[in-house]
Length: 316
Image 1 (spheres, one colour):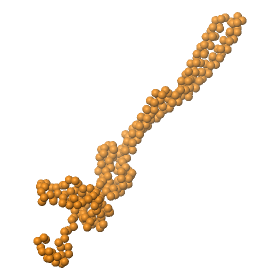
Image 2 (spheres, helix red, strand yellow; image 1 turned 90 degrees about the vertical axis):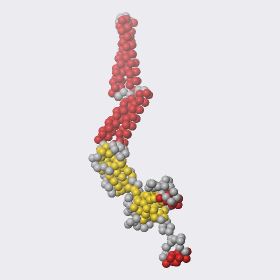
Image 3 (cartoon, rainbow, N blue to C red; image 1 turned 180 degrees about the horizontal axis):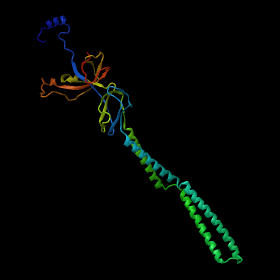
Image 4 (cartoon, rainbow, N blue to C red; image 1 turned 120 degrees about the vertical axis):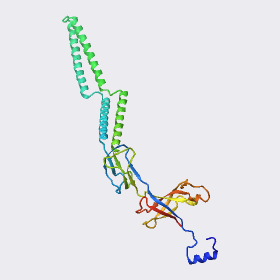
């Protein structure tokens, strides 16, 4: 083109519009889905799969249920340990049982009655002894009976006081710690049971189901993939000479077979290192073969599908 005279180029351009102008660069690529993967936090046999490929699902919807017999048993055992620990703590806080305390109180009332009777008998015997009507030995025996009855009353009063007291501080702290540990075990067992039901982490369309009912899934192994709205991106490649002319946030026009007009792709990521097909020599003539991988988000994707080849053009 540079070898033609300028006047000849002008005449040809008038006759053939567009002659001599550089074509608009086209960048080829394909669509790729940014999937959300559904996985179990614990291994187990799949009991139910509640969604099929191509189905629209919503965040929080049940997708997969694993067998939970062992987890239910563990939860029942943990809740039983909580009940035992709670009862032990309440027993320490309230002291002895009411029935036990009532027995001690009844024994104390009898002992006080016996003491009163012994004191009355002693007073009468002392009066009789002063008139030489009873021997001194009888007075001695009755004084011993009063002393014994007094000691019995004192003992029962002490037992009643102890029975009505709550537990010592150290015992109470230990019982409270045991109860807290039992509650923590129950919470953990309840969480493990809840984890046997796998919910949709996002709204979207089920792209792939990787297991069938009855199969065993592992910890963190994807069991299902979901393509959320706006989850498509464009992967395309920029030639090395044009790499510096692109910027993050730049809009490109997307075209593909059967696509409508007005689809815009926005550059959101560009590789810092080039890709190439070896062997290659980094000379001035050969480095044009280098390309940089780039990604762009899509507005108005419509019916576009992952894997679909597309072409991008820069806005004029």
